[in-house]
Image (cartoon, rainbow over all chains, first blue to last red; front, side, top):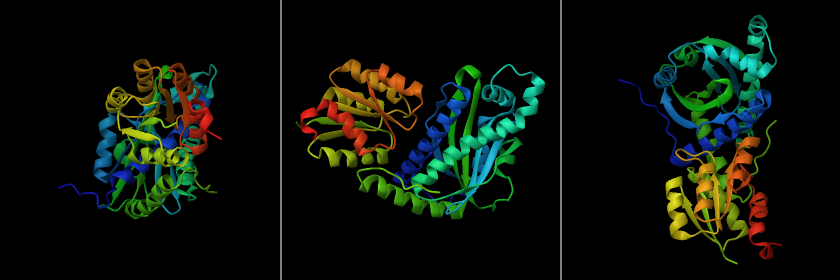
Length: 220
Length: 124
């Protein structure tokens, strides 16, 4: 029998988290738009607390092919992992869109790792930075790392998770229509961070509803 | 002059934040809320609001389409699309739909600037 998530978020907490993710991803999309010089389409974010097994099933349900991801870990009051994920087959198209120009396949392949890491860095930092600022907390964000694999490998990156831990699974789809690029951002938090996040969300809700100006304090 | 304002956002929290900002500016204005586009259009017909503040990124029909429908149903309604997604294409589409564009997080200053166009005498 599948384990049940042991932390739940209330309606307003989920609302707040969805708003935060929306702010973060919108900021990230603006950066990507500048890089590819085209509108980046965003889906409505989906936020849920699920078991690790459910998170893997979510990823694998959306993708049957191999994936490429850029991941960064973050630490502070909350700690976790953010991933920019898209089908491996679209990797070079994203590089081509970001780098621009008429590069040969050899040149594209040479630039692939570096361009993916930099694109992921801009997107994930934009997203995490905006969320941290709105929570009034500072997050230390690691350097980006490019990984290849499937959903299970992405969710089970080291350090190994506790078997009973649940994860916050955030999914937002982005697409650059004319480039045939489609991917998504996912964020994973473990149980202690989810408990800490609940408190931060309560403060965020208080600020958003008890003051007339929603002006977040700035984190470093 | 007292007005009626329609606030459309699938997020209850976001609606609460808009209401708080509105309370500081125009506590006497009446407000109606909708969590989706279908309910919003129903309220446009039944409540005849003067202003509609519409979130862009909603499940089902998005705020840009809703803004255009609201304007089509009643061109007298002043509509603003609110979004954290402020890519130039989104802002242009809001304007093309006859709506203003306001960035999230919404500040009372930005809301005041938008509302002052509609009620200039009452705003200092």
